[in-house]
Image 1: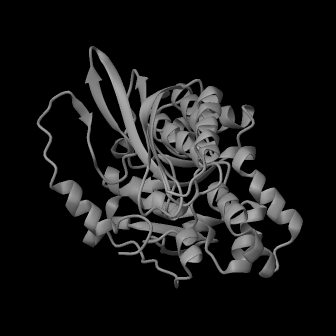
Image 2: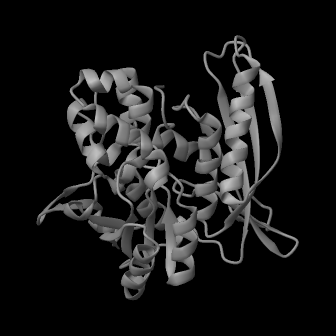
Length: 345
């Protein structure tokens, strides 16, 4: 297999083999769900786990942010974090100190407690790896499968914040060689912090403001794959109006120079929200009032209609990226995508 997400069909087979008989498990492993949820002592606890594999810069900071996002999209406030930090044999003590400092800074920023984990020097590693686990609490669990036909799809910020920032930070010389200007590369690097890859604040605000049926954090495979995952989890189709999807200027410039598709580029920082039609503008207005860009980019439709894109009135299947455009670029691979085909899902 190639680097990146586990192939979709294989992941479905793996997850389908899991049988959970514990009645306290409210949300178990399933495609499209960002975290698990269990009932503990009268409380609803949400749990996520995610590794950081693409980034080498600010790896500890990333680990907190992406796991916090997975908790928040379930309607919960992130509260407790654990991390396994694996260091290569040639690592200096300063590297461990830097990673721990990054994790603590990110936890303090989001009011999260770093409560434990594991650290070791590991044979065979070429670079550090961090695997994070996050816990949070909520009074109502929001599941991807809770989306309903007719729901509006709101997208915050635009695409692709994280993928663009990582390309600028991990491959800045290659970007300049491809003709991307110094100022564009510099701005792209700062996307990590402004608008940032955290969706915690906007996810909790959306859940408090209107009838939100589902939220999803577009990560590997970009927005296109996130729409597929959300629709599949709910047993629905989706229509995305491509002309309403905001592509960040830095993303457009970098993807144009490198021949990448913004719709398939790692998109943490954006939040995909499925909200009842009557509450769409209320939620979008609340997000904009909080200085978070938000736009309705489409809706959920019947499963039979498939997952489609509307480009200025012309309909076609929305591609599903089996491999993120970032991973494809970093490994020098050819494009890998396929059209929506619910008959095989």
